[in-house]
Length: 135
Figure (cartoon, rainbow, N blue to C red):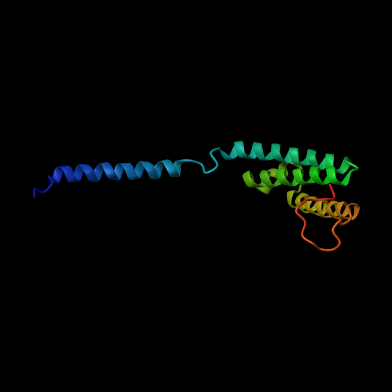
């Protein structure tokens, strides 16, 4: 059996090495979120502004179920903002983000208990039900 030429082995090693390095460089050079920090900060502030708007709508709504829905949207937007930007960056809007999150969670809890009190249990026997009956 004939052995491969040393030049062929060296060329194959170089091609393989360049291929591995190019794959690694491509993975390292990409931002995991795909965007720059400045752009993420801007989007985070926009999401925080939307969260504040949903909170405002939740506070104005007199129906607990709709207020709960608006508050849940506010929580979702603030968590999305926190996922792509830091709290210190978001606080440039003049909002203390951890305090806002805790107040939103307290609002959800209080609205949830209001909804539970308004919608009495329809299944007092404890039997398993396959349909929601209070809607």
